[in-house]
Image (cartoon, rainbow, N blue to C red; front, side, top):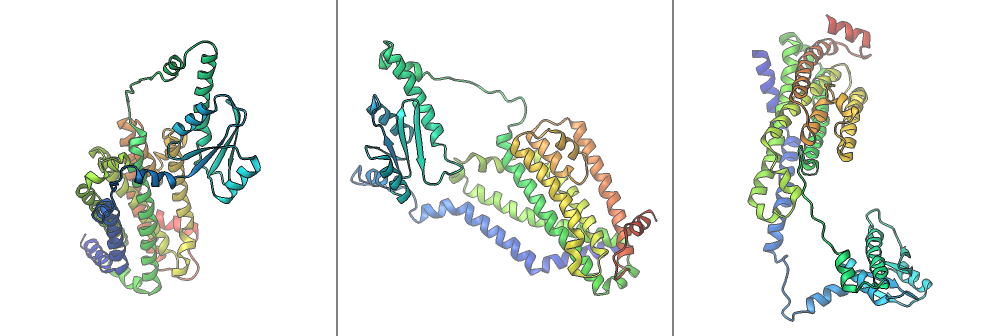
Length: 421
């Protein structure tokens, strides 16, 4: 235990004195401070809305700067009604009824004078012209819905129903209530994504640092002296625990400062539901997040440390850890695809919830965005704890064998023999 404490203290001091570690932490806190205080800063410098003393002058100037939608209504009945309908459907645009030819309309769009154009053939048919079709362009969907209502109103009027009665029929409000029996995935998505992404970044960053530190000590021959005065288990666990604590401290500083800055500027962010949901995470989810975060980090850190001990040169680290990195990235992608699809209880996620290399991400995602029985959570954590202990001792044995081997990396048969021994 004394050897573990000595190695742990030494590694922690090296992290704290590391200028890159402290610099990155300070930079992240500074960026978060700027983002969270940004609304307050813009208000202090007069970035708020200004009242126009002349009444309609500001509104007129704003309208002049709006993008233009051309509307061609040649030969369309109730053209005035159609124009009014498009103006209500696209209030953020200046809708202009045009009698220009099709070539002239295309030239205006190509020249950037107007954003797009709707050339109507009838109330149920039109052609939408745009220069570059954005993947977020939903104007045709809005126009389809508006024209569908307008067509039904026109049909009602032709069959003797007054415009007022037709308008009341089409504008009937539908009310509904939603009773959620489980989790609100949309509400929980933000902090689930942040946790998974933070775990992804910390494991890759600190895992590489553990592997690099081990390889550096081995290449400098310092490991040969250390291995004779300390047990491999103490050395491996000391290094990994120190890196885990350093990463944990960094996350606490970053997310703690974000929570503090949010509370100081809470009134400025109250209208953004996603931001509020991140800082209102339930306590039980926070506990689960810490448990899976620590266990997930440890199992990968042990593996990175063991792999680092098998290489003779620092330049070989990236090649050596590539299979482990790809395994982790594959698990990350499965979780991300499941989150974005909303199907967090698919067969892939169920399997990943019990595989120790993916369960920290998969099981937490299922807990946060789905309904998971308590016994499944207990089984997943138990498997993960047992795996951390087993991988830790196996990594220590590989570490003892690897640090004394130079030149050709040890073969798999030799590694398995060292683990069994």
